[in-house]
Image 1 (cartoon, rainbow, N blue to C red):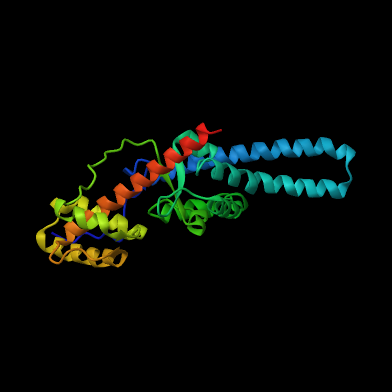
Image 2: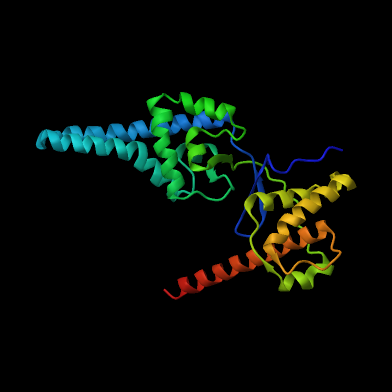
Length: 269
């Protein structure tokens, strides 16, 4: 059996508030085009409303002020509105909301103002100035359907309305429970964490020779983020399973504490 390649992942691992891993595939080119067309129509409508309002106001304003207001209307329509909308909705424009899409970071986390701003700014050039040509060809050639704005911002678009098949969480190896409880476990880099989880999920499908090589490589990389090292003689897959299970449990506990704190603060108002 050929050795699987975990450096390039074909699915994206998102973590919900309950620390459950979800696989969400990238949005297809067709959905991206339809979503983009909806957003273009909305942007054009907003610009039209603003221009109409300025035309009415022009009757009582001088020409210089009108030019400044027109420039502001263009900036608001093409940059300000999409940036604010995607920031406040955590990656959903009106077109994406209609089609069940969402913009996420390359590591599958929620986007911030900076990501939304860069996508909107580059979109002015690739979508409006060049009539969507650069965006179309970039998405066509990208495995994740990324347009130029996504490459610049470090984002891509996923489908949310899919049927998810969740595997059982990785259990804690009993022989490592005591060690994991006292170990200092830093968060693994996104790529390494995804590779470890994918490796553990595919263990039954990997022949022993490939499993030993991959497990050793992943365990060596993960040990840099763990102190102290696991007990001597620990199998790589057991060590990796303990790290994943311990991190999941600690993240779930942290989320629970934060939820309890928010509930307490809310009750105190």
